[in-house]
Image (tube, rainbow, N blue to C red):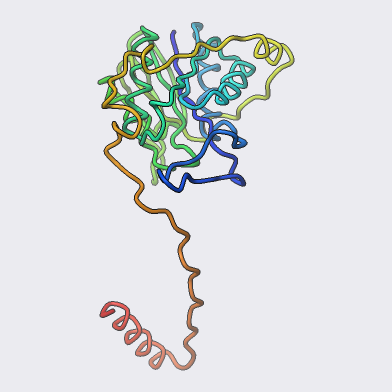
Length: 261
């Protein structure tokens, strides 16, 4: 079984900076970590390899420093790693990012399963995984909490919902986005860390994956961040005191005032 895990290196939550010109995150020189949800995707990919055999390839798009995230993934049991790094990718929104990742997946070749974390901690949109499936024209199942079984032609999974979960069967190849309930990520072993230290992740540019210039980076992004600001502090609420009838009337008047204004 050939499994591809897409991960993202995100800024540490205590060290986020914004480019004042492009209104995009500044990633160069910023302390970064593997997106927390992607850690569950890595673990699930490795567990499936241990159950069914095959290979796990991890892929990420980012600046050269994102190689650190790939090496960490290798230390956890991933077999191969691909870094997509090119200034032409800079400023990509979720659609352009999913296009770029899908172009790289096509270059990798045959695969049975793509696994992504359900969302990234910086963008928080949960759109890149589904976007990849759209570009590759393959089925997707989101919010997967358990992979029950995989055969040569299909996968049966539990998809988390607000009321509980659905059992979904989907043909392969397909894409899954996973939630933290799916597993507990392992720690790297000494052997894994030594292997990661000597590993040589593959590095591809826009030219290598034959990406369309108009579909990546800022030029290929149909959405733009126009303005970033910190919301004004919320004012404290008002406590209404008195009998039930009095408080009810006062509350109605306050609500009317809010609706009118």
